[in-house]
Length: 134
Ligand SMILES: [Zn+2]
Picture 1 (cartoon, rainbow, N blue to C red):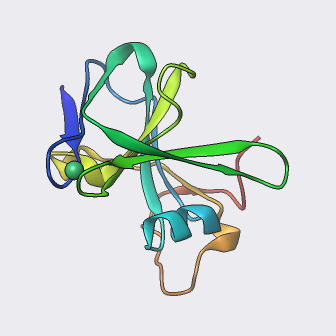
Picture 2: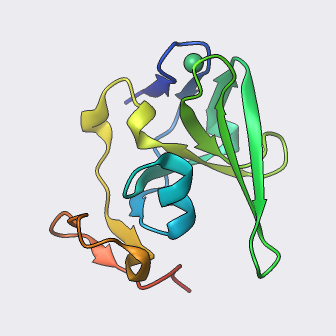
């Protein structure tokens, strides 16, 4: 199965030659603020399986514990598409809302539910974690 997607305007595109290693929903406050939504749906792909083309803006935010969260959005339309600095990690989180076929997204975990607002409902059947698992 081919996984592919991109931003709203089509300038920033991605394609994966292998399925994601994991799929889930992140309810952390950073994802909420970064997306302007209640959560970010993510899919973890190996860098070796992924091709990303187009132009994007890199937003880097350093957490209190020193970790850096990197999010990338299309330079043309602003659509948020993937996390991680290209060329510097062996796995990337692609945001599932960018899928051409959103039905391919089958989340199994819910992360940072301690930050989840009451107006966001967790789909049934997901393994839930208060924060980031182990
Ligand atoms: Zn775009």
